[in-house]
Image 1: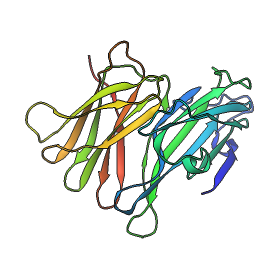
Image 2 (image 1 turned 30 degrees about the vertical axis):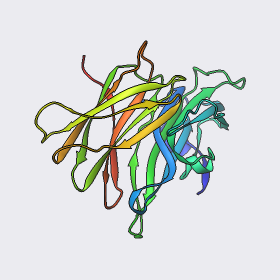
Image 3 (image 1 turned 135 degrees about the horizontal axis):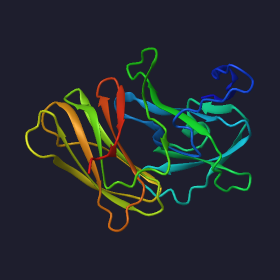
Length: 266
C-alpha cells in the first residue's frame, strides 16, 4: 500500500492572501481514532485503515502517533514521530501496517508536539479515517466504514450510549472500548433492540488494559431491529477518559457502519 504526502493548497478556498483559514471542527492538538487495524476479519474480509493526517498550521508540525493495541497494554509501545510540512498532510491506505508498522486491531492517538517533544497547544491537526476491505466475494471495489476523529481529552462520563446499529440474522453487532489512560478500567455492556420488551439485557463485563482496546461481537440479543448499547465504566475511584462505540456488520458482505457512544443524560 502506498504512503503519500500532499499539500493542502488545492483544498483551501481562500478569497485573498490574508484570508483566514477555516479550520474543521475536529482540528486540535490531540486526536484519537478509536478503532483502526490491519487484520483479517470474518468471511474472507481483510481490514485496513485508510488514514490522512493534516497539518492546518502555516508552520511545520511534529506529530507523535501512538498505537493502542487490542487485548494487551500499549504502555510500552514507543511513539512513531513524523514532521508534517505547513498546510500539508500525509496518508496511507494501510496506515497501521505501512506507517506505524503494526498489525492487528487497535486505536491510534495523534499528539502535536514541539521539536523538544513537549505537547504543542498550537498544533492544528485534522485526521480522517476509514476501515476498508476488498470485497470478500472477489468482485471489484471495496467495503468500508468510517470512524470519526475524536478530540482529546475525551469524556470521563460513567455511562455512554450508542444508537442506531442493527441486529438480525443478516447483521451482527460489535461493541468496542478504547482506554487511552495509563490505568486499567473495567466496563459493563448492556443493550436492547427496539423489538425487545423489558429492561436492557446484560451482555458482558470486560477489563480494558492501559492504553489498549477491546472489541467483541455481541451475543444474546433478542429479536431483530435497531439496538441501543449502553457502556458503563465500573472502575472504582475517580473516572478517567475512555471511548466506546458500536458497529453493525453485514454477515455476508462485510459492509459496516459505526456509531460513537456519547454521555447518557443525567
